[in-house]
Amino acid sequence: MKKLFLVLSSFFFMTFYFGQTEKKVLIIGIDGVRSDAFIQAQTPNIDALIENGIYSPNALNDDITISGPGWSAILCGVWSAKHLVTGNDFSINDYESFPSLFRHAEENDPSINTLSICHWDPINDYIVQNYVDFKLNVSTDAEVSSQATSYISSNDPDLIFLHFDDVDHAGHSSGFNPDVPEYMNAIETTDDLISPIINAIEQRPNYANEDWLILISTDHGGVGYSHGGTSMEEREVPFIVSGNNIPTQVILKDSTLVSNTAFNCLGGTPELIFDGINDYMEVPANPIFDFGDNQDFTVECRIRTTSSGDVSIVGNKDWGSGVNPGFIFSFKYPSGPEWKVNIGDGSSREDIESGGLIADNEWHTLSVSFDRDGMMKMYEDGQFLSETDISGIGNINTGQGLFAGTDITSSYDFQGSIAELRVWNTIIDPNTIAEWHCNTIENTHPNSANLIGYWKMNEGTGNQVIDASGNGNNGNITDAQWNDSDSSYVYNYDETPKITDVAVTALTHLCVNITPQIEFDGVSWVDPCSTNTLNEFDNGQINIHPNPTNDLLKFTLLEKNSIYSIYSSNGKLMCTGETDGTVDVTDLKCGVYFIEIDGYLPKSIKFSKL
Image (cartoon, rainbow, N blue to C red; front, side, top):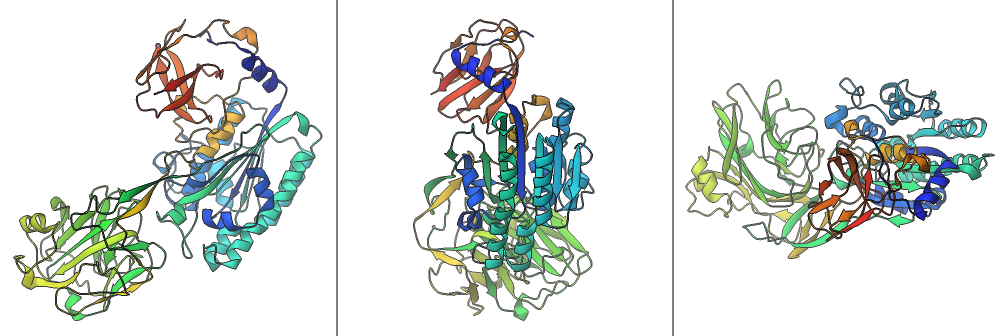
């Protein structure tokens, strides 16, 4: 197909420049780095890279915060729905359909020199596989540094991946927190180990003619001594794109001040907030909450959250296994987005996982009735959702109390707000659940005599919540905080990088042709390049109209059915597809964009979206 180009002086420079330099990429993966700890750590070598490119402290692992799926997302450029890895055993995967960037690079140019050195063996063994020229598993981070330095100094690598693991080790052993000296020291030690690698690159004999792109990110953060949930401490990660030809830019999340009462029929203040880090509300053990093997009961609560994951919202069980005795409200494993309910007796379990997508920062009432010789029924905001037979479930006693924000082992911590926790020793019928789901409980409620626990969680101060049922089972607050403001900040991460962007950015820099058929979930943070000569392009002009536009973009094509890609002003791919000369840009935000046709991007072909 004939390539259409608007040829201006900027394009002459671009073609000349790319024809005279060797494109090279170094990806540095530092396992388990919390973004707030990364900001506070003393990292002069990484700071120098930040000053030479794009940096975001608010990048996201927007999927499963476990190493297997995390590194698969980074190296394959797709989320777990495509690569299929959900844990660290890699027993289920689809690297054939969605391989690592090494396979894309090698198939695009078999002469490319590729290198992968990992402290965690499964990355090389399962993800990278044999699509690399030199692959090495080592037992220490120091070996990663020394082996990489030696290889860069004595060989001519084009694409390098290095995995450092000691930060994650420190988090598991001492805690993922900027207040933990061992954790911070591990980050700073990794920075020291990066220094000789960068020096080896800059001392290469042909360095002046090489265009190095250095990418740094991580698979997840952490909270407490672990990770795997959906708290921002686990999801939010640093992201660096550094190079001599990368414009300096810091990309931050957006914040919006919203009313806490906007979506809460019971009022928004005061509000008990759980940050997902060892905070909870506990109602002490009492036989009144032991439902044995035949006691019917109903549990309700209101919650507001932006996070979904393998957490305990409310319950009375050890959530280490769904078979364990007790009940719990959680999210569908591993990261929702649907909420679920579980009940177990020590040998059997039943679950309903068809709840709604409630992690939307709006208040929702969750209600579940447990008919011990019949059905467990799930309701959301007063509306029936689903049911399952629990007549086969036996004794669910745990000898513990009730917990909000965590399970009985103080694990699987929930992030968000909880209010109106109600426990009844009977089945509440659907009509009553619907009528009272957005009201406080009064003595006019038809089942008020069956209310055995009722915590409004609206005290606004102190470390205790009062049992409004009159039974005196007051709850004790550990570290959760009261918010008595009428408004709070909501953060938006739509425009910040995601870890799937690493592979796409690296391949784009290497001039690998990225087609829509690859189905990457990530986008590139660098401009596409061209190594073609001028005589391959038409010396014509593309006529874009209307420009500016607010809905349809039209442009003249000499050939029909061209592939288009639209990029933001910082090189981020916004959309791509096939066109005969009309593109709908209604969904783009206001701004300036560049359009690429059939794989080539002259910066002069730009348009404005109103």
